[in-house]
Length: 263
Image (cartoon, rainbow, N blue to C red; front, side, top):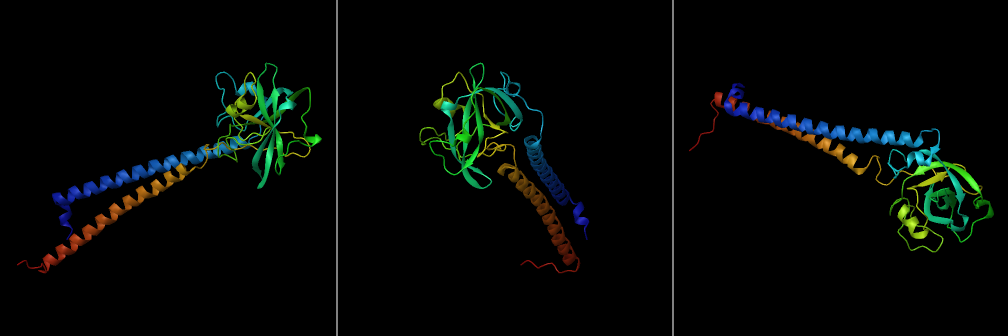
């Protein structure tokens, strides 16, 4: 009954079906590998953000060869020494922590070579006002701040806005925005969230960069493509078996003399 499978037409069709299934399996496996790579990167990034390690001077992470904060350096503990510029403290509104609306207290720290580091000394609930309680004032004189290196903010990330705020407030923490407000000899890339905060403030945890190496929409697109290719491969197998069954039934009908008579 199934000797028709050895005819050239069916041999060619079967070879084409096998090739199609092989391609679908290969493409599905490739997309699955892409998804697994993104999951692995996401887990490594989370581990690097939460891993505790010895704080290193900021110049060891941000130097001439690597001046920008990357996914490899974000969240790393750093130290920076200098003097707080208390006259140019900035408040960064619309920042959410633990589900509550509040603001960052950002105080520039001037290093010995004249560069500046944006140090977020903590988060406070509510809306910022023009003045802060005395307990939240930055200390005077040389200090060494230990904190976590954070990436530049962009519009739409964690409440960041481009502008339209009153004097003394900053809508977005990045080098360009800081240069527009305070013209120092130069700003270090990103910012530092201090580990030790004054009374009335809460330490800011590491903020995942927008579009960073997380389980993004593209990762789930890879998973969706994986399922699609495997479904396509299964559909090819299903159609091949269906055609074989229909041909076998036709062969059986012809053997029983049940072929339809053509006028």
